[in-house]
Length: 114
Image (cartoon, rainbow, N blue to C red):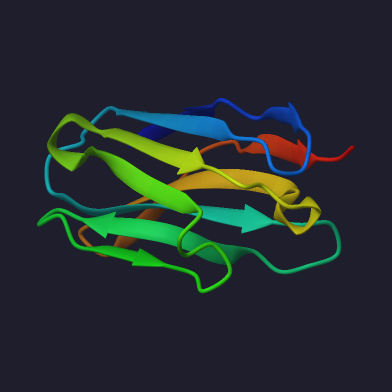
């Protein structure tokens, strides 16, 4: 499974961005897809994920501001990020899990700054 993330950039506090992820290769039987982020000097953390059945889960820090969507059967994933804060600045990674094996994309940088 190969993952290609895009959509990062520089945005002012309070602004919005939409991240996209496209999976290719052997994408059948992907069970979960999600977004993680890693800020400078910090560990990678879960932002949100969605199951094949459509259940979603969000980190408390992004609830009410971020929305994950997509179609796992087609290998597409999105993250709509609203009301962005400086603490949302990080490299955002797309993740997919298939048969218990995790796959990662290359990451896209989101910078929230005035």
